[in-house]
Length: 291
Image (cartoon, rainbow, N blue to C red; front, side):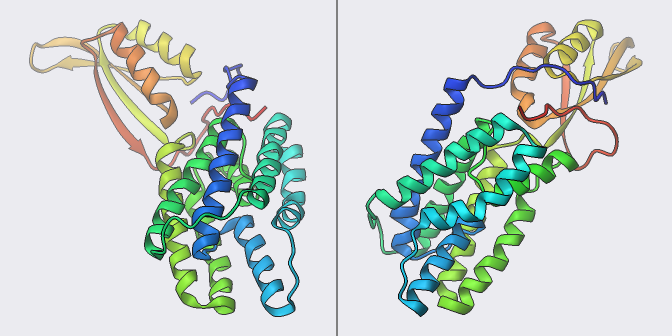
């Protein structure tokens, strides 16, 4: 597959800002309605911040603002992101970090339910929604999301399950310090969040398309112009009518599939398209870089 650099439209500044603000609000409301109320640990740097905050109050009777801890932990990832991932990407991520931290400290805690399982599941869903808003704005919510994006860009595959594994370590520490019940429910919270991310943000997931068509040139032109991915052409004979057919083979990102499939069917309504989930790509694959 081609790795030629091209200019592919990114979300507008207004759209990105709106998505980040929405993500920050959802994140903060979730922290104060489910996470704080149920005393869960969400994992990542937000979980580490809460762990330090609660440990300092429990063992030393010292209250440390969540904002201060979250800013301090994100300092190194922000620098790495600015240098190696993208400047605008980092600036929008900083906006998310600042807004979510300030809103978390100022929005009052609201207990919606006392059921720990409901808090874990729905809190995880809201957490996944908040992070997804940021990712669709080409930004992150900070912390381990920077790590996930960095390695996803390098390896070309999504790393959310790896981050989930890292978060288990944070939750294990919380279990030792504050009891295993809340830590185990926090794992459910984190699992729910990871599943939402895997469903809503699919940029690093790969899809293989096998397209049988009589309009191979037009179909290839759409693939190339829409995604900047190449394709391989095979010719053969359809057994039913004994007519010559062309098979185009290509691999695209999962988030490109919806719009691309509509364009392909518009070009050739008779095209037969087989969509296969691709586990791994070994070789060159174009990925739009962060701005």
